[in-house]
Image (tube, rainbow, N blue to C red; front, side, top):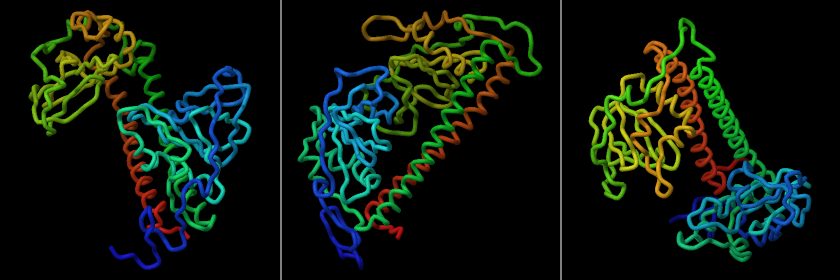
Amino acid sequence: MSVPTRYKRTEVGMIPEEWECKQIGEVAAFINGKAHEKDISNQGKYIVVNSKFISTEGAIRKHSDQCYCEAIVGDVLMVMSDVPNGRAIAKCFLVDRNHLYAVNQRICIIRPRQVAGRLLFYKLNRNSYYLSFDDGVKQTNLRKIDVSSCQIAFPNTKTEQHAIADSLGDVDALLVALDSAIEKQRDLKQATMQQLFTGETRLPGFEGKWQEMYFAELCRTIHQRSPISSGDGLEEGGYPLFVSGGQQKRINKALFINVEALVFSDGGMFDVKWYRGDFSVTDHCLVVELDGNMPFYREWMQLNRRALDLQTFKGTGLRNLDKPSLAKVRVPCPSPEEQAAIACVLADFNNEIDTLQCRRAKTAALKQAMMQSLLTGRIRLV
């Protein structure tokens, strides 16, 4: 393959002539974290950076009054140990404040010397070189030499380094804003459901007390035909297959033809989806046709999923969705018109959430394309 003009061939591929290719150990210092478990405190002033903190983007955190390994602004913190096929190994966190983060054991500090910290973060976060150490069988443990040996290409000027990091940072900021907007819509929907399904708030034109019925009184059919076994190994096709946990696959066989139903799943937590068309289910799902507004009852059951989880699952070992218990669940039964009106309000929330999620997916795809172009020098910003 010919080398494009003003580019050169390196161990990481073609890069601009003005760029450098070096091992991490040549451009950054490596520092191992230290154990903080004995000093964990709910009121501690330091955030203990462990694998769970990094893998959850800081959502799950512990604190400590002591700090035996302090991170500084610009440091890249990396997870060095994770279970097979885990999502934490080589996941990174970019330090944004001083005197706040205490780095725990099995986390390393990569302290940049020649490369801007933000650019180094984008280069190293879940880097394919580090992921290659995960054989999918035993726990992955990166060593100092493994971390330090990773080759990266980077611009030789801080101006271009910061330009790349700024561009990717802007996309990250947009993703954070979209996540916030999605969460806000979900919270608004949840609050609206709480009011509408308890009768605290009634939509205009509706009044009077709601009736309650057993779920069995609304059901036309609770299908008990033999479902597809999750181990059947059917080829990928055009029909949805609902499996344990509410997930979907696509296979080449449909058990239910032109059916509108609620699909209940027993994947460790009560889950229900509304589907219309041709589809199949595994042996951990129930398919229910009923007289009533499908979206209305799907939303009601999702709102009450924790209580229904306790009511409808039986057994202390392998959990099984119990059909008789599901049939005895008491559900609200407003008029068909009010069911439809409530379902319409909630559908507006769902449509807004779907729109935001679509925007987020496109933005994430854009970021991925930008990373492939900017971090390799195929597109230059300066």
